[in-house]
Amino acid sequence: MTAPDQTLRRARVAVAALFLTNGAIFANVLPRYPGIKAELDLTNASYGLAIAALPVGALVAGLAAGVLIRRFRSSRVAVVGTIFTGVGAFAVGLSPSLAAFAGALFLLGAMDAITDVAQNAHGLRVQRRYGRSILNAFHAIWSAGAVLGGLMGAGAVALGLSPAVHLGLSSALFAAVAVAAYPFLLSGPEADPIEPVEPAERGEPSTRRRRSSTGPTPRTILVLVALVLIGIAGALVEDAGSTWAAVYLNGSLGAAGSIAAFGYVALVGAQFVGRIIGDRLVDRFGQRTVARVGGLITALGMGTALAFPSVPGTIAGFAAAGFGVATLIPAAMHGADELPGFKPGTGLTLLTWLMRIGFLASPPLVGLVADATSLRVGLLVVPAAGLVVVALAGVLEGRRRA
Image 1: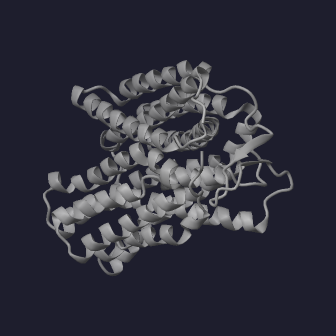
Image 2: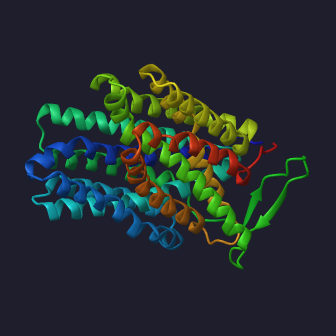
Image 3: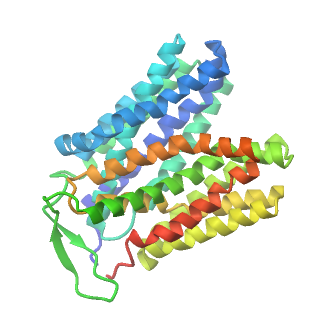
């Protein structure tokens, strides 16, 4: 395998910059929510309805990403999308009323969804040129950007900056980073007419194929459904950590608030580590094996924590779950983008759109189960998600040969 040239290495750094900005712009908004809620004197119900505009915007606009990518290229859509994501974040800070707040969140969700598909599509283009896995590292950098944005938001609150000033400055900063990265992204058509395909597992010689123009077959649709379920499993575990970890540790196990926060911190931290080393694992063992082992780690780690509840054990269980699902969403995106019969960007767009539906449905699902039984029972969705991944990982790519 030949080493990537300077143009390709620069493109990789530029895509990494896009992932960083996407995570940072969005995370800068989150620490401002309590202050905006108080400033607008919102009830819990009205605040919840306003926040719901974010995923609704993502669902409404998400399916447009594939069309935009084919018309304007993923590089342009990702950069322009980043700029308008920043505009949405700035609008959140300017919101003078509930309606304006909800409208700004709708715009933020819509632009974030389009940007997400475009930057992943371009990252996959770079990955194909590299000939080895690098997408997990991009997602790790997104996580680092989210941490950076969260720290910036917390610092802005501590310094007493108004939401408008803070979100205006942070959005302008990261939009400028995205614009500066644009000249180094890949040029040319979105998909080459001829693309490499991995050799079979038994070591047959490498072949090449053309993208099918006849449309997806029923088997392709079934593979896409399996990939969506794998992606939803990864998103569900992430949501269980962000939505329920602190509530379970504090309310059910009696941990102090400062300790309860470590459930989500452990999940995100372990996920970051898993994504940093994930590309090497995928290159060595293949996405299929890595996903299966990760699913087992998720099921056993969180299953044991729920079977024998304790504060340290539960924190360790969330860490195991975060590490186990680290590579799932990048693997599902890679698989969807490589599906034959779809136009460039369509498989990836459908995957991310359907994943957002699952992500939107998971919090109420856990809540309904928790209300009917207990939160401990509701959190069984985490080990169940791991078992789903083990069952469906066969649709993922096996080990490539040099």
